[in-house]
Image (cartoon, rainbow, N blue to C red; front, side, top):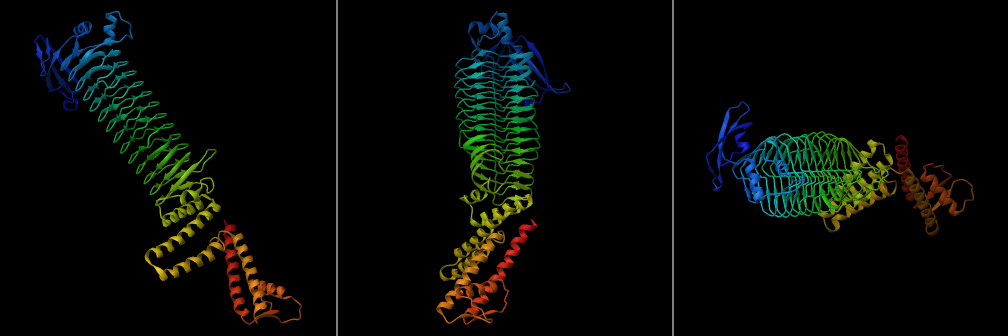
Length: 586
């Protein structure tokens, strides 16, 4: 049985070396026994564990002989391949072959560093599983492991400083899961993997910078699931992934600054679901993803800025569903997606949504409390469908009816009803009123009323059949003619004037035809010589404008038509007044 840091919770230890041979549970023979007493912060004993013991010089001699290096359940002090090369007068960057290396459940300690830099582990499996690095830095810089698995699972690095810069791994898997790393630098820059899986799941990184800058993770799966970081900088800048899945699910990043700028996420599935970000800045600017599924769902974020600008994911469905972006600015400026979903999100602060393009932009059921800027400025804008159904707009949308193609992006929705589309135009109508875009407000209002009317008709048709639907069709036709065709719901006074002119000519022609083909007539009460055409048009104008000089009056059935025209004229003049005053007052 070996000591786990999480169980022992020790802060230091005391070692006593006995010249008594030690045989591990696996039958490994060591010439000496190390009695390790673990101490807490007050130097109280927490427990005692027995290890085998080898001196670094004895390990160096085994390396010279080309022996297997088996250090399972062994206590090792000041192991350093840099010292080995110096003593053997080798080049500082020459590789040292460690054959069939294993150090399971071992305990390493060094005054400066436990140094495995430029180690060549060959084609065999390498295991540090359950090992404690109780003191000193841990250096694996520029190591080579070609085919075997490399296992650091369950390790404890008390000093918190681990470096693996430039390490190269071949076909085997790499595991640093269930580990605990204290406060300090965790440097994994420029690492290169081939086809193996990489697993950091459930590792405690505590505080300090965690750097994966420019690392290449090959074609295997990458797992950072349920990792926990208190503070510092998490930097994957310029890192690249292959065809494997990338998982950061339920990772906790604390108040760290998280940097995924210019990362190539490869072609596999990317999953950040349920991760928690604190008050540090988050950047994914310029990230590239060639796959289909990018999940950023149910994320909790703090007060820092969130930069998703210039992302290239034109083939991807990027889902940020139910994410709380917290405070701090949010930007998707210049990014390109196939589908971008912000469904049921909290947008409590300024959000720059001037994306470059998306087939579908879904903002349904989202809550907007501040400004969402969607109006393109000196950039291309291509959105096929924009879904705002169920949006709670407590802030403002900065949009333009023409530049944002508002009518097209709502009407292109394939999964929403007419009622839902009409509600979205109502949201735009109210928003344009607040932002002072009154012409756009009128356009949105017309679309809202049109779709609302069509939706009412559709509801009747769905519940009734046959002749019982006739009143609904009549009502719809009347509303279309009077409210929409005549003046676009009092938003277009020019349209009302045109309707007035058409109505006037229509009634004039009716009078003319009635005088030609019936006994009806328009009689002059004064002596004049107007032609039949002149009488028809003159009577129509004085009737339409309700002037009523009395010099001509209708006879016969023209009386009924004159009454209708008088009402129509009075209605359209009032309609024009409302539409005109509405424009002027705004």
